[in-house]
Amino acid sequence: MGWFARRGSPAMVVAGLAAALALLAPAAGAATPEVPDPSVREQVTTLQDHWDREAKAANPVKGPKPDKAAKSQAPVLKSRLLAAAAPDECFAGVGAHYPTGTYDDEGNLVCPEGSQTKVNQAYVWGLTKTGDDLWFGTGPNIVCLVFSSYLRSTGPVINDSWVCEGEESSFRTAWTPGVTLPPTLGDWRPADLFRYDQATGTLNGLTIPDSDPAGKARLGSTIGIRSAGSIGDRVFFAGPGMGSYLNVFVFDTGGAYVGSESLPGFTNIRKWVEVDGHLYTGVRAGNGGQVLRYTGSSPADPFQYVSVGTVPSEPAELAEHDGRLYVSTWPAAENASLYMSPPISAGEVNVVDLGSVWQRVWTAGDYEPDPVTAATYGGGALTSFQGQLYWGTMHVPFTAALGHTDVYGPWDSDVAELANALGSHRAISIFRGDELDTDSPTVELLYGSAVLPVYDGQAWTLRPNTMGAEPLYGASGFGNFFNNYTWTMGVYRDDLYVGTMDWRYLLAKGAEGVLDLSGIPAPDDLYGADLWRFPDATSAARPERTDGVGNYASYGIRTMVADDEDGLFLGMANPMNLMTDTSDDRPEGGWQLLRLTPRR
Image (cartoon, rainbow, N blue to C red; front, side):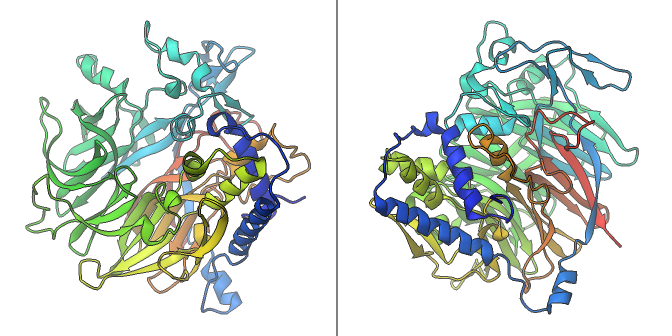
């Protein structure tokens, strides 16, 4: 059958999407099987053909002859594993009590008979660098938290690679006596803070002293350490709390704890960026957001700041380009967009009236012709490269399908459900902008789709993208149907690197038990996050790695720090919490920290 034989093959797409819909049926509403309208079958065929053409037309590298093109696409970096997550829990089955394990002489967790080791810390969610040290915080079982929140599914899912217990997790009542965590947090665990010392090759956990019980409680009520930043002798970790507040933890560059505080009214944070000696970050505030500038710290007030701008939706990524700050946003009060600050003067963005809004230079509807799908786009990573601004999109799988179901559903057959999944699906698109601060800006589509499926309330049809543009270099997702996040970008030694999330393995394992996959080869070389490289501003991207950078269970390059003198550092996202057996032929689950350096 060969469902996994080609990247994004339509047979796999149909089978995989059908399986995923079956998994999510309690959330999306299971359709009653019946003979569908023949026109719906035709729509599915049209959509399959569309994505098949995209896969076949993937990433044409223009210019060099074939032999030179092959050489130009060879990886230029080698990778080395610096640190990885360790199993931290004994798992005895969905809903069961977690048995107490012991540790052997080498510090490895040993679980009692009838249980197995489990690794809960899945993401290097926030990462920053000072000198030789790498500082990062983790995100626990994030894919399970996405299932329970974005995809509205709190029921358990288990296979041999990962488990989400959801509402049946015994941890809900075990964490705090007398308190029951909500069903959406059944798979949550407290995050970790780390400092990796490259000089000694050691990984050191960062702790909050017992003398600050409020700080310890803050860490215990933080969803995860979604961001990290640094300036001078200060290192910042921050993440959303379990209410309408943001938690910030501050250390000095010697590893000493400075303090922590909660910021009420702010509920999310992703990115920090230093520009001209000033540190900025974006935070969600209500349905909108603010960009903050750090102004100082003390034990009594470890994170002092001023607001330097507002955006109508949640800020995501930040970058400096051509003397201004740019911020991508996630949908809330409006569609995902790209905003531009006033000019940076005297080394800093000036404090502005909170009633003023930075200038919008792009929005998802400028490209996406389906308004429901456009409303589910997220703004991805962005960076300045050779005089132009590059940015990409983010797509949480099936949120657009759920959006169409909310607006147009329920669907009257399984085939109509499948048409919805195929029609609303999007892989990442990559854009490039120039002269964005002028009256004549230009925006180019580098990777994307010339035509996209649109639902008009009656049927799915193919329409040109809103730009009316052909992609300059190749298909959406860099030709990979399952590249759904533009998670990271960084410029290292004059090349632009783009890290993605590829959810193929997650879906394939989730399909087990739903479809008969016996006899279908497992494509280790196709699973895992992609790392793409733009050698310059006039060439297509080259595939640096498409295998999770050596671990196909790592579905995302979640964080990236580029240092020309030291390396390209990647924080990986790997939610395969049951892949902990070091004696088998599979890689391990949990976060990894990697260092990439030139091969020559």
